[in-house]
Amino acid sequence: MAQEFFDQGLIKVQQKDYAGAIEDFTRALEVNPEFVEAYYQRGLAYYDLGHIPQAVFDYDQVLQRNPYSVEAYYCRALARLALKNLPGALKDVDRAIKLNSYKAAAYNLKGVIERKLGNIQSAIASFKKAAELYLEQKDTENAKLVLEKVKQLKPRTGKDVVEKPQLQTKEIISEQDYFNALLEKAERGNTQEAMEDLNWVLRADSQDGKAYCCRGVVYCKQGKYREAIADFNTALQLNFEAAVVYRNRGKARLQLGDNQGAIADFNQALKMQPDDDLIYVGRGNAYQAIGHYLGAIEDYSKALEINSHSATAFYNRGLCYVRMEEIPQAINDFQRAASIYCEKQDWDNYQQVLDNLRKIHSPTPTIKKNEYEKLRSRLLRLVGGQWEIAQRLIEQAKFYYPGMSEEWYIETVIHDLERDFGK
Image (cartoon, rainbow, N blue to C red; front, side):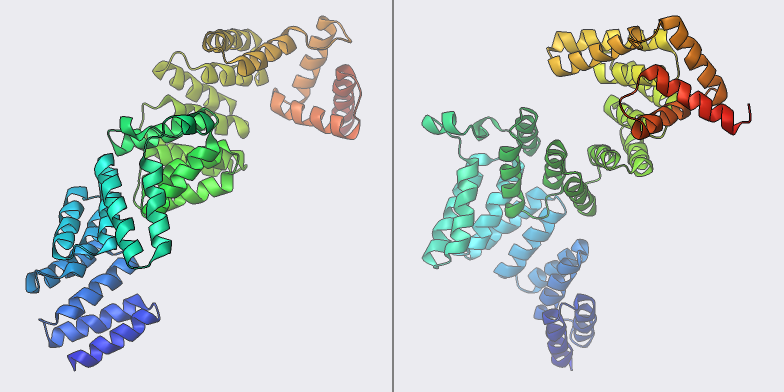
């Protein structure tokens, strides 16, 4: 009877009905609690379903009954890796290699674990051994994949460095340093190289949530926001719950126009990391996008309490002050932002701030400033003091009647509103 349940379970595994297979393997074990292969197969099914702790339990049961099971050690190493138990995973894969020194996949897995532990030279040695064994077994496809890992980890010297700078892994002391170096590479504009490195990491370990997060950040820098969100979602599904994931997913959602979704992500990020000025800036941008300028100003001010040299916070707060007709405050914020950008030699943003300052000081070249201010005040009264409403009406007028003066657009909007109000 136990064998019948077991055979039914194997059929369901082939059909990828893992839940059904688990039920059959469990029935087989109820009949025969010492059925070692049933524990092993149920562990595989649990792993495929993403129930990692249950898989580890079943591999434990196998090894209690058969301490020489290479596959059980190997599979438990995979499961422990998924649970971020790197020392336990390394211990298991070493045991598997000791029992079978010809198992190429075990050396490959050991290389992945060593890399995560920051032991780069040991990782290279393990990958080389895996490639050697794959070649002996005429598995050229896996051999190529492993050799590519070796190539990525090895520091480059001489002519190769000039032609294509690579990540200098000899300086890497931890997994965090590795990913920081990749993101720095993307910041310098080498997004394609950073993407290639991250794709390699994910080929080596498709369950690396941090790698998905980093790739999502690089996608954002490339303007591929949907791809970025997909990677951030995957990182969260792999239990990489970090503020950086929610913050960057919020930025991507904001770029796609999902303002409320962005705010929700920024709120979650702030629960996890309440002292991150970048999160406040991000949420401020989302509030600004929906016209909630007071909320945006509050967030930019909070960001500046945390980081008084945030040019982005000063600049965006200045934009909100402009929209609320608080011109003196806007000028002050723009000037402070310009000074910081100048010190950083960020000339593109410096010029953008200066352009906004010029717009404030020179509202329109065609009419006198006093007349312009009178028109603005008249329009502002008609829209109940909500300047963002006035702006939308002016933009509509510009869309339908392009090429006219600023004075003409304001007068047209005033005329239409007074007509509608029966004045």
